[in-house]
Length: 70
Image 1 (cartoon, rainbow, N blue to C red):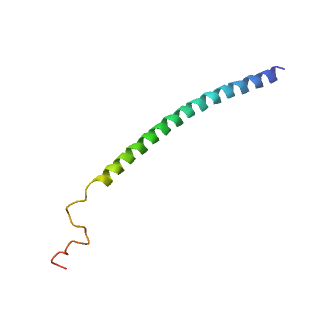
Image 2: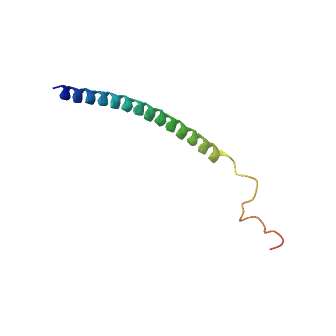
Image 3: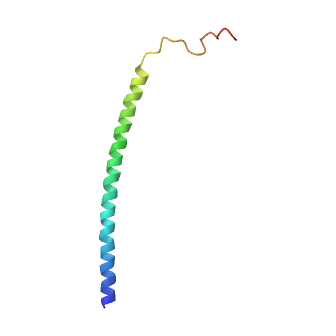
């Protein structure tokens, strides 16, 4: 009977440890998800600012005259 009780107790300890680990992992996943959402928002803002920038006064490479040695 002691052997059965020891096995049950060992299983209970393993389950308790696994529950704690799952909670810690869940907390980390939530933090990373929030960080990812924040970074996606920042990227959207940067892209919208980039698209809003007026074109440069410089001519495009296809419009540039080649250097004299060509």
